[in-house]
Image (cartoon, rainbow, N blue to C red; front, side, top):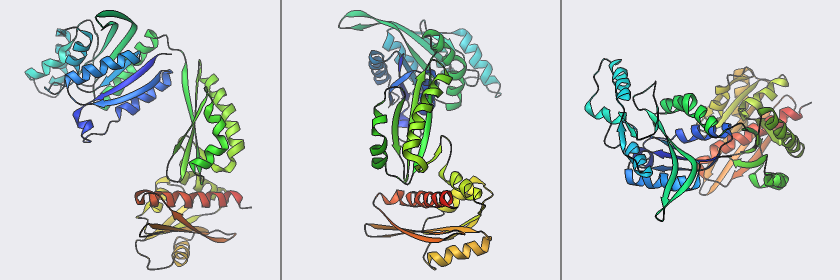
Length: 396
């Protein structure tokens, strides 16, 4: 299978002024095509550095995709950088200039002279008209490179240069680049992903349970830890989506046999929605109360829009006990069950208390958190949700 690298171009990205969402989008598209992405990097608006970076990427990958630097201003150097990288001049395309002029005229304006830069493309490149913007994209086929004074065959490697505006990039990638890649590299395989969410267990404990599966080659199994939740990712590459699904199903069955109810959901499931669904299956309704969580628990429940959630109360200072506040919320919102969570920090000690009130029982849990204080509230909420979820599952 072909390999790819992504280069996001823009000094604003390096300065942290703009978030790079393009790399994530491109990575997912490449994944769906079965193309292996081994590296992604960010570089500023400097033609020499861009040229060197693309040159180095071509030594490693079959496909190099750049985003950004195709605008009309002086600090949009990608066209020149790519031309220098492959040793060709820029070439003016009158038809592109007409398209750019026509597009700008829709806004009731005339193009400025500097916008003419966007009609210059590296010689012999495949031009991709931009139907939703003024920056055309292009594809450069790279048959050879000079190394140590010799011309060395590259075997049909390509450079794809896309605009940095996310909507424009996404449109051109799906409408033009994906079909080109499929044809150029005879792509038939797909990569399918299944993610299992595990709550209440640390990454180390999960690894101890499933470590042998993490050594598989295809499908692969990997872990990503969050605050109180760990994602177990299964990725399978196959010729068809159904075959990839079958491969994933075998591994998922094994994982479920080992992790059981520790698995709280899959793919787009959220812990709060899964928890409320478990509550609803028991015929319960829920109210909540939090102390010093800055609304974290209430927001998570409220965003689900689930009918089982009746409402909650917030106390930023401990003016009442966790028990009194939780029971008061049950009465106020006429709910049959409730969860209360409090967070406190003294020096380096961080304490979390969780109170669960259900039609069957009342239980309080005292936990300590040893991580960064900025993650403590999210961890506390996730632990409370997991305790409530398990209680609803266990209730007879």
